[in-house]
Length: 228
Image (tube, rainbow, N blue to C red; front, side):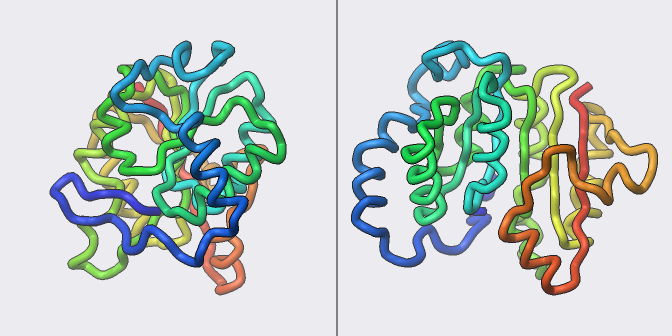
């Protein structure tokens, strides 16, 4: 995932990998401007989508887009915003949207914090943060997306009863997230037994990051927090 630190440092390294294919570059020039969320415009669901969605869900750092595409396909009446500044990940998403004719996805290819600051209050029903960069070294921890500051933004945009869903295969980041969220009075952790965080959510689509973790012998945690 690629975002900016509230204090000005980067949450990520690079923005671009291998060179885009010609058709991917064409989609960046033609389709992305149509789907890109304009922070200077009206960000209400009614303005973002041709048909008013039943709810609005946000995925920050969708990577290869596997999870976002499945959710958008499974829930065609829900509107989705996918954030991903990594150019190659965005290119893959644009290709799938174009191929499958998906109408319920809008995209943001820059800093998700800027988007969180502009979204209307209580406009999001579900927010996903899946396998964010763990920044494992102690001096890098401040670059993690989960912080007291970002949680305040997430709490503002989530409607009461809305969910913040977090997944990671890095134990320390899982503990970090639990610690930060649980000291906030704006969320409730929806876990009553170990399987509530050991098993993925219903309808889960594994991401390439999760498959890599499984291959390397790491287990993931799936945390669900409700906006109170």
